[in-house]
Length: 461
Image 1 (cartoon, rainbow, N blue to C red):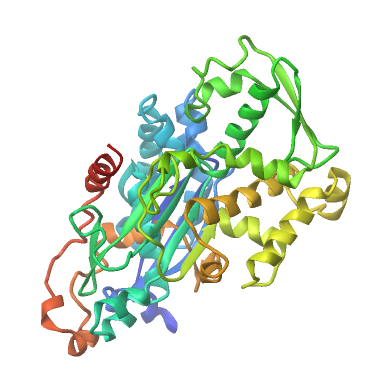
Image 2 (cartoon, one colour):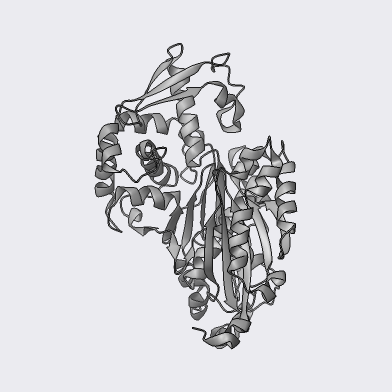
């Protein structure tokens, strides 16, 4: 704890915009300049949700993407003493929504950068993160906040060390990421990013699945249901509650890369279709399962779906962002066995729209009808794709905040770009470290991921 004006002088700040597919958030971090390279000294002092949709929704009006950020930038400046503002590193990272759009539109990022440059901060750039970077930075964030990187510094043995590092599970609107340290050197033929943090090297496995975020999953699900029922324009939706109807235009599926507008099965012309909820839990699961190509893995155990390689899971995982929000809605206490979770989801899916909307008057009426689909999707992703089972289910901790900060890629991103994670061990740990490990590599080596692509080709050729 700091006291008085003198202590304020030691504080440094950083700000990062997380421009996701469905919305943008701004995080302001602060830390004590004296302790800059120790772990877990950075805390989150402010978060601000930008009004409106994600920046990728402004493709037809790029200047508005920049303007949308102003209110949060203004709030951020109020949280930073005036004399410090010009030194505050400010970043914007865009994720899967912009990965889907990027070829079409460099203009949105240019406008966002232009707006940020008008403010008295040290603007360091707006960029699109790769899925692998998003996974790796989320993994750095949670382990930094849990102090895992220095706790493990006390252990000599590499296997012991890795067992105390957490995996990261992230679910956004357009993509989902899994990141963990696999056992042994499964991945160590340069196939994975190697990160050198506080004196140890970690070979992490990370994969990002584009179009498997929850919003894109829901669009793909609706499209499949519509195509299967064609030419009927009244379509039963097993994941929506009974009594709930939603009208969608077929042309909206042509616009999104995830729903493949060129699909010949899509009806021509601009037809409106009504999705009618039928609240059928098993039908919901069956429909969602079809969105994954599980047969692409053949007999291989080390494969999730769509032919993607994944070594066996290991250790505990923090499941954050939409994993957390959907589970929070189920209102279960932490650490419930899988059977209890399944039962809660089953009950949720059979509740009528009338019952749900009167029971949850405060819940966003756009979100409320989607919890049945989202929670079933999460179970299929975790159990069938990533291969958690009844036992390893208990290794997943659903949590949004770790200490004072939100879990997500933004903190890890800032720590890396401001060089705040030293490759060598902090002085306080030097005594415990075999000198072998304290290789003074000054950058985090994110040798991202060309190797994974090569490995996929090898494995599935």
